[in-house]
Amino acid sequence: LMGCAFPLAASFALIGGGQLPTTWTLYSLSGVVFLGVGDSLAALMGRAYGKNKWRELSNKTQEGSSFCIFGTCGTYYVLSCFIDQYHLNLFLCYVFAAIPSAVIEGCTMQHDNLSCAMAYFAFVMMFTALFDK
Image 1 (tube, rainbow, N blue to C red):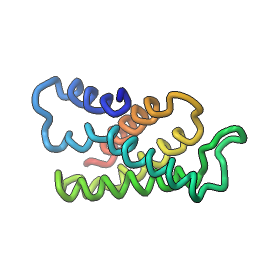
Image 2: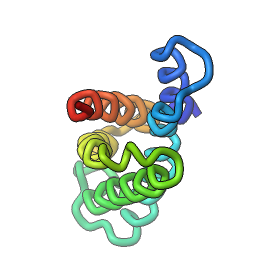
Image 3: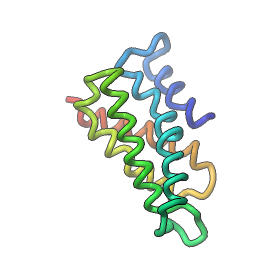
């Protein structure tokens, strides 16, 4: 729950409180999208199709992390179409943010839901700040 709620709380704090503007809606949903869709796909598909483990003693696979990236990016594409069309221009930022976040998710042993949601939110904010010119 903390992983899903952190991006919303951080977005609220970063804009100084009040109602979230439309441009911040997708930022605040990053925890729910990454954990709800990406992490779920990683678990399901990694168990079904996973062969290459990230670590020897881990159950997490590289194939599961790939599905996490595709699921997260696909969900953000659909949300961008419905919520804020401006973010379609920034779609690669969400892709670039999903890759290191999925690697972090694959390599961590504990507390991955909290650390991955925070990392994904930070990467999304960083990449959109870099490319939103």
